[in-house]
Length: 206
Image 1: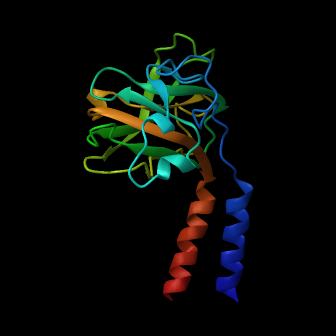
Image 2: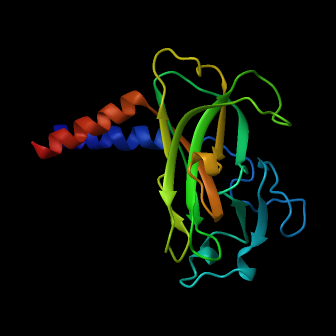
Protein backbone atom coordinates (compact mmCIF):
# COMPACT_ATOMS: atom_id res chain seq x y z
CA UNK A 1 0.00 0.00 0.00
CA UNK A 2 2.83 2.38 0.83
CA UNK A 3 4.31 1.87 -2.62
CA UNK A 4 0.95 2.55 -4.25
CA UNK A 5 0.50 5.68 -2.17
CA UNK A 6 3.94 6.95 -3.16
CA UNK A 7 3.26 6.22 -6.82
CA UNK A 8 -0.05 8.05 -6.67
CA UNK A 9 1.51 11.07 -4.95
CA UNK A 10 4.28 11.17 -7.55
CA UNK A 11 1.78 11.06 -10.41
CA UNK A 12 -0.30 13.88 -8.90
CA UNK A 13 2.80 16.02 -8.32
CA UNK A 14 4.01 15.48 -11.89
CA UNK A 15 0.66 16.51 -13.30
CA UNK A 16 0.56 19.65 -11.18
CA UNK A 17 3.67 21.24 -12.67
CA UNK A 18 3.23 22.09 -16.33
CA UNK A 19 5.84 23.43 -18.73
CA UNK A 20 6.80 27.08 -18.46
CA UNK A 21 5.46 28.63 -21.69
CA UNK A 22 8.09 29.48 -24.30
CA UNK A 23 7.08 31.77 -27.15
CA UNK A 24 7.13 30.03 -30.53
CA UNK A 25 8.57 26.91 -28.89
CA UNK A 26 7.61 24.78 -31.91
CA UNK A 27 9.15 27.22 -34.45
CA UNK A 28 5.80 27.46 -36.27
CA UNK A 29 4.95 31.17 -35.86
CA UNK A 30 7.45 33.20 -37.88
CA UNK A 31 6.96 36.54 -39.58
CA UNK A 32 10.00 36.29 -41.86
CA UNK A 33 10.39 34.22 -45.00
CA UNK A 34 12.20 30.90 -45.23
CA UNK A 35 15.73 31.05 -43.72
CA UNK A 36 14.77 34.27 -41.92
CA UNK A 37 14.95 34.99 -38.20
CA UNK A 38 12.96 32.82 -35.78
CA UNK A 39 10.21 34.80 -34.07
CA UNK A 40 10.82 35.25 -30.34
CA UNK A 41 14.25 33.56 -30.50
CA UNK A 42 17.62 35.15 -31.07
CA UNK A 43 19.89 36.87 -31.57
CA UNK A 44 20.91 34.34 -34.24
CA UNK A 45 19.47 31.38 -36.09
CA UNK A 46 16.87 30.91 -38.79
CA UNK A 47 14.00 28.64 -39.74
CA UNK A 48 13.16 26.32 -42.63
CA UNK A 49 10.30 23.95 -43.57
CA UNK A 50 10.64 20.26 -42.71
CA UNK A 51 9.15 19.40 -46.10
CA UNK A 52 12.14 20.95 -47.85
CA UNK A 53 14.66 19.01 -45.73
CA UNK A 54 13.12 15.59 -45.03
CA UNK A 55 14.89 13.08 -42.79
CA UNK A 56 15.21 9.36 -43.58
CA UNK A 57 12.82 7.92 -40.99
CA UNK A 58 10.27 10.69 -41.31
CA UNK A 59 10.17 11.78 -37.67
CA UNK A 60 10.42 15.39 -38.80
CA UNK A 61 6.90 15.05 -40.16
CA UNK A 62 5.64 14.65 -36.58
CA UNK A 63 7.28 17.90 -35.43
CA UNK A 64 5.10 20.34 -37.35
CA UNK A 65 5.89 22.35 -40.42
CA UNK A 66 9.13 24.13 -39.48
CA UNK A 67 12.41 23.69 -37.63
CA UNK A 68 15.18 26.04 -36.54
CA UNK A 69 18.88 26.03 -37.32
CA UNK A 70 22.08 27.85 -36.35
CA UNK A 71 25.87 27.60 -36.74
CA UNK A 72 26.89 26.17 -33.37
CA UNK A 73 30.61 26.26 -34.12
CA UNK A 74 30.66 30.08 -34.35
CA UNK A 75 29.73 32.83 -31.90
CA UNK A 76 26.03 32.35 -32.68
CA UNK A 77 23.49 31.59 -29.94
CA UNK A 78 19.74 31.04 -30.04
CA UNK A 79 17.82 31.84 -26.89
CA UNK A 80 14.84 33.39 -25.17
CA UNK A 81 14.66 35.65 -22.10
CA UNK A 82 11.50 34.87 -20.15
CA UNK A 83 9.29 37.06 -17.97
CA UNK A 84 9.34 34.15 -15.47
CA UNK A 85 11.88 34.30 -12.63
CA UNK A 86 13.81 31.60 -10.79
CA UNK A 87 12.12 30.23 -7.69
CA UNK A 88 13.94 28.63 -4.74
CA UNK A 89 14.35 24.86 -4.39
CA UNK A 90 13.26 24.10 -7.94
CA UNK A 91 14.81 22.07 -10.75
CA UNK A 92 14.48 23.50 -14.26
CA UNK A 93 15.02 21.42 -17.40
CA UNK A 94 15.40 22.96 -20.87
CA UNK A 95 15.37 20.55 -23.80
CA UNK A 96 14.31 19.97 -27.42
CA UNK A 97 14.60 17.75 -30.45
CA UNK A 98 17.80 18.17 -32.49
CA UNK A 99 19.92 16.72 -35.30
CA UNK A 100 23.34 17.53 -36.70
CA UNK A 101 22.23 19.51 -39.76
CA UNK A 102 22.41 18.30 -43.33
CA UNK A 103 25.75 16.53 -42.85
CA UNK A 104 24.55 14.71 -39.70
CA UNK A 105 27.52 16.04 -37.74
CA UNK A 106 27.65 18.44 -34.82
CA UNK A 107 27.34 19.09 -31.11
CA UNK A 108 24.64 21.12 -29.37
CA UNK A 109 25.12 22.92 -26.04
CA UNK A 110 21.97 23.57 -23.98
CA UNK A 111 22.31 26.38 -21.45
CA UNK A 112 20.31 27.86 -18.59
CA UNK A 113 21.16 31.24 -17.14
CA UNK A 114 19.62 34.48 -15.96
CA UNK A 115 19.54 38.17 -16.76
CA UNK A 116 21.46 40.45 -14.42
CA UNK A 117 18.67 43.03 -14.42
CA UNK A 118 14.98 43.15 -15.29
CA UNK A 119 13.91 44.42 -18.70
CA UNK A 120 12.89 43.53 -22.25
CA UNK A 121 14.99 41.00 -24.21
CA UNK A 122 15.89 43.27 -27.13
CA UNK A 123 19.62 43.84 -27.29
CA UNK A 124 20.33 42.14 -23.97
CA UNK A 125 23.87 40.87 -23.50
CA UNK A 126 23.99 40.22 -19.73
CA UNK A 127 23.52 36.45 -19.83
CA UNK A 128 24.82 34.87 -16.62
CA UNK A 129 25.43 31.16 -17.15
CA UNK A 130 24.23 28.64 -14.57
CA UNK A 131 24.55 25.29 -16.40
CA UNK A 132 25.60 23.82 -19.76
CA UNK A 133 25.14 20.33 -21.19
CA UNK A 134 26.59 19.37 -24.58
CA UNK A 135 25.35 16.53 -26.80
CA UNK A 136 27.31 14.92 -29.64
CA UNK A 137 25.04 14.42 -32.66
CA UNK A 138 27.56 12.83 -35.05
CA UNK A 139 25.85 10.13 -37.07
CA UNK A 140 22.35 10.72 -35.68
CA UNK A 141 20.13 10.27 -38.74
CA UNK A 142 16.90 11.91 -37.56
CA UNK A 143 15.66 14.41 -35.02
CA UNK A 144 16.16 13.01 -31.53
CA UNK A 145 14.64 14.14 -28.24
CA UNK A 146 17.53 15.12 -25.98
CA UNK A 147 17.50 15.45 -22.19
CA UNK A 148 18.81 19.01 -22.46
CA UNK A 149 20.22 20.78 -19.42
CA UNK A 150 19.01 20.93 -15.82
CA UNK A 151 19.68 23.37 -13.02
CA UNK A 152 18.45 23.18 -9.43
CA UNK A 153 18.13 26.30 -7.30
CA UNK A 154 18.71 26.31 -3.57
CA UNK A 155 17.13 28.27 -0.76
CA UNK A 156 19.40 31.21 -1.63
CA UNK A 157 21.32 32.30 -4.73
CA UNK A 158 22.01 35.24 -7.03
CA UNK A 159 19.64 33.81 -9.64
CA UNK A 160 16.56 33.79 -7.41
CA UNK A 161 14.02 36.37 -8.52
CA UNK A 162 15.93 36.95 -11.79
CA UNK A 163 14.51 36.35 -15.26
CA UNK A 164 15.17 32.86 -16.64
CA UNK A 165 17.21 32.80 -19.84
CA UNK A 166 17.44 29.61 -21.93
CA UNK A 167 19.56 29.22 -25.02
CA UNK A 168 21.63 27.04 -27.32
CA UNK A 169 25.29 27.89 -26.81
CA UNK A 170 28.08 28.80 -29.22
CA UNK A 171 31.38 27.22 -30.20
CA UNK A 172 33.06 28.32 -26.97
CA UNK A 173 30.41 26.33 -25.07
CA UNK A 174 31.14 23.17 -27.09
CA UNK A 175 28.92 23.76 -30.12
CA UNK A 176 30.05 22.23 -33.39
CA UNK A 177 28.86 22.40 -37.02
CA UNK A 178 25.33 23.36 -38.12
CA UNK A 179 22.51 22.26 -35.81
CA UNK A 180 18.82 21.81 -36.58
CA UNK A 181 16.38 21.93 -33.65
CA UNK A 182 12.66 21.85 -32.92
CA UNK A 183 10.05 21.80 -30.14
CA UNK A 184 11.69 23.50 -27.17
CA UNK A 185 10.37 22.92 -23.64
CA UNK A 186 11.18 24.24 -20.17
CA UNK A 187 9.90 22.22 -17.22
CA UNK A 188 10.10 23.17 -13.52
CA UNK A 189 9.95 20.60 -10.75
CA UNK A 190 10.11 21.35 -7.01
CA UNK A 191 13.08 19.77 -5.25
CA UNK A 192 10.58 18.00 -2.96
CA UNK A 193 9.12 16.30 -6.06
CA UNK A 194 12.56 14.93 -6.96
CA UNK A 195 13.07 13.66 -3.41
CA UNK A 196 9.69 11.94 -3.57
CA UNK A 197 10.75 10.23 -6.76
CA UNK A 198 13.97 8.98 -5.17
CA UNK A 199 11.98 7.72 -2.20
CA UNK A 200 9.67 5.83 -4.54
CA UNK A 201 12.62 4.17 -6.25
CA UNK A 202 14.13 3.19 -2.90
CA UNK A 203 10.81 1.73 -1.77
CA UNK A 204 10.52 -0.31 -4.95
CA UNK A 205 14.02 -1.73 -4.45
CA UNK A 206 13.10 -2.80 -0.91
